[in-house]
Image (tube, rainbow, N blue to C red):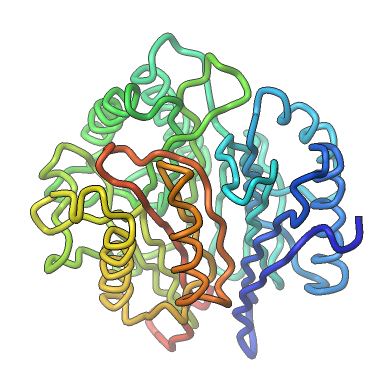
Length: 375
């Protein structure tokens, strides 16, 4: 399958310490069958880790599928490999007409292992980074599924000496039929957070809540998460951009717009799913995909600036569109402004119908902070 894939890579390579990479792998020939596309993508991944980034290990892989019910079982059967990682598989069709795409986050200079509960630990120096992918259950309603997911995750963190409020940095919530089920997800999250000391007076957790399907139609919510054991008070900071965005609790939800974590040698930034919204919680530019995209960029840029970062520090972008007809316009806009940043465009309605587009990203910047150990 030579010539059937593209690989875009972001590199953060410190003189000493852990190197970080984001790679976006895509298929360039949509005429291939799913089996052929999967074969080509996995071959490209093998080339990535053996030739392009030798010595790097995958921390998180997220596969985006066009039809999970038919495709996920086949993909999972192909993923038996020697090196494990946190694995996320979600139906969010790539908007370039292909059947599969892959975002992979890799690091070099770390030790890694699969924990007994199935989570994935990446350790270096004073820290243990715990990644969790594709958590789900079959409770009767989305609200119940979300509550069980958070309760189970909280217990798994406790087994590792962690707390949801102190150690969890980021979550991703994929909701089947988001226009119907998101309200139950929000209610359950609010209720669990309250029991864990996560309130408007303390803080929440950076998150994306977006449409996405599991292969099993009874699974209404699935969750990925990231936590760090070993962080000290003051290392985790929250981004607000009050000139552009309002606190999420003002419209009944409980997540942070963004979070950054300072280590001795770097600052990592996690920008939550961000749309065209103002500081009163209103949709800006209803019905205008171009202006919504520009306002969304401005919002993200303001959040990054609060962490003393710019788009140059961004390692990857995931862009979600409600209407596939907007893909050509939005892709042209992104290609013009961010030609070198690894990115993927997905069909995934945002949690409020008026938002036509949403994006999330991660960034990293070299710093020197003698208060904390290096990453």
